[in-house]
Length: 149
Image 1 (spheres, rainbow, N blue to C red):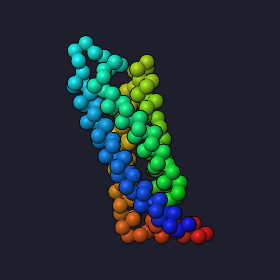
Image 2: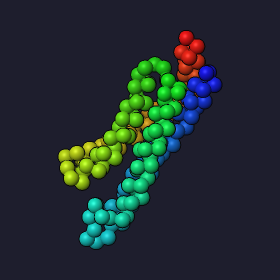
Image 3: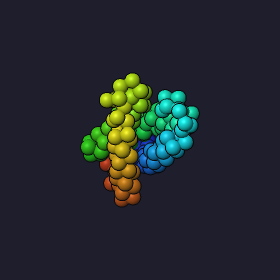
């Protein structure tokens, strides 16, 4: 079981870093999509935003699913770190809902970019945390001890 925890923790370290990079790519894609809109197009029917929409759903569905699976396998200690990973999953789950419902309810849609900033900050924070704790072996050792108990 120690190998599973160790492998999941290393995987979580890399997937969280790629997720943070994906959120940055999303900011570039929305910028491109908004500035490349044809005259008279609205956000609802702008084809230039399709890349942002498509990559966003892939990132929130598959990326978040992978982060959740790896988090549950690695089960990081202390519990506050586990809570931060689960918060990342919840915020990522809410992100497409905010975007979709934002078309009809501007009060909900205005939180879509704010939530994206939270996702970026949290994923960068967790990437830095995972890098530091994998390097000194503290997190892997704690996970192995918890699995043995």
